[in-house]
Length: 96
Image (cartoon, rainbow, N blue to C red):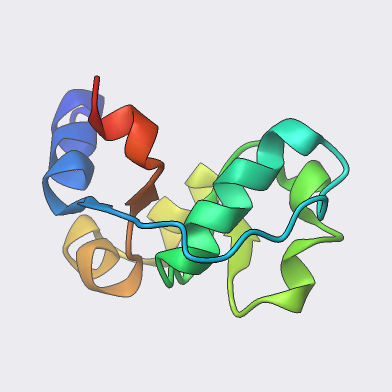
């Protein structure tokens, strides 16, 4: 599957997330707190990122795991990926 198609499919299932709660500071890198808050508020099952190290300490408080993109793709086909992972994006990104 082409990367462009994968990204288009992920964007198609993404939904806006209203931030109801904030848990700052929670992570080693304060710039990553927004990603964690969006994932938790959006009930995401996982945060898919190459930056797993910065999320390691803070994410264990929530029911959300941190996995690499390679792991996410290895776990299932894209069809299963749609149902297994809920994609959350910050509201600011949706305005672009």
